[in-house]
Length: 546
Image (tube, rainbow, N blue to C red; front, side, top):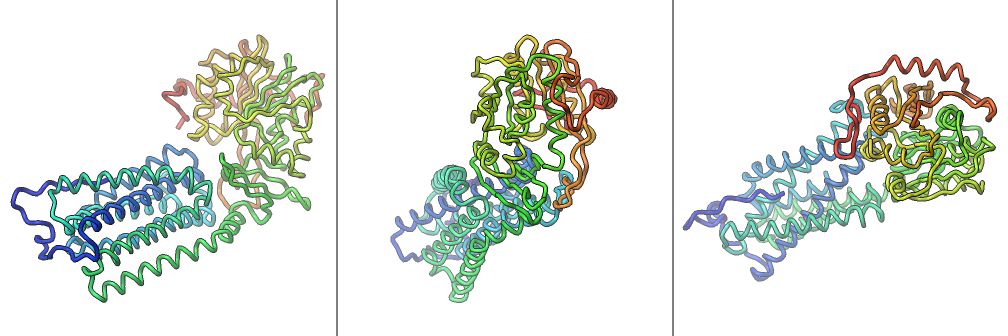
């Protein structure tokens, strides 16, 4: 994001002449010095983009809705870059010292921003509203600080490259643009393909900060050391050494930090913590009488304290009142929905479509989780496929009596396409003539517009619907955040080509938590909250009811 300077008029003095400075005295030839400055631009641009992507990735992981987080981070950062570029004019008379100080500060702030963000989230709880809460404020403040420092780089680098050899401003800007954009390309590719998978979010940010500090320090203390006073060299050297020491210490303690943060978030009984290629998976409890909890990307996916109620409400009404020999479960990698479907003796085949094979391996091999799902994946009737639910529905030619959408809650960017008219059209295509579709549509009490947007979208796909809800999750005393302390309900939508009956099969398995009378009352209760006139969610115009 380079702000080009206006070309100097013919006969105008060179930048160093404007500030009463002579041409830089370099330890290398001017051509080599110019190349080193452009190499510094390349490295700084790569590091700057990594900081941006790191903030977006971590904020999306902690808060969901990656579009909102990316918009906040990038808009604040670009705005701050403009302010930083203007503020850097005061440093141009001491460009080498100013650039060295800016890079040291950027390395410290950018390198530690991810750890600070995660710490505030872990130890202060929920994010609150859009602009409230410590973590949200820290996200904006980090974006602002990093943007100011990145913006200050460009005028200082322009000054330094002009001091090496006088050149028209247009040519200098072109060189800086080229190095900056190539560096941004490398940083943008390095983050998802190298830093994130190899080092993780926290260590990757710290490593980037170290690279940034070394590059900035080498340019200022090496190439332009003669522009610095002896005191200035000492101060800059000490500042860079302190920054590197802080980053190295943080990297050495990052594992202990993550364990402490997990205990703050999930309680003191974390048994499994995996960084898969798809999401973060945490498993708590399940031993010594402690309730088992499965968390995906920081959100409670299943708890042995209340999952039976959720999965019976999701599966049993869908399999009642019609054929159910062939069942498709979209999501459900924990095996709990399959467990409930297997209770019906008439079920001959269950296909589970899960995006993350690590969750399925955990459901197969973890003693507590596999016991909770009744060893469902060991049943020969259950077939698991690793695939994206949307893409798999587009390609399959199979048909099913029941389709169960056990997917991440609507309202987050990662799940948006799974709650669109196109997705439900694909689900309708794989249903047999008497088939039923069951959708978990999120809580009704706390997010009614989201819930009724989902129901409206299902009807727009040509299906008749029966909405209902059940009282859901009870407070979790082991969690600190506000979201886990609040009770909620679960909202569902049963759909079919003709209006389906919301019932429980008298000849089917005996429910442990549901009754037909309670289901009918829940359906009447949720109907009283209906919001009419909501727009339909589509791929090109996604809606989350907000």
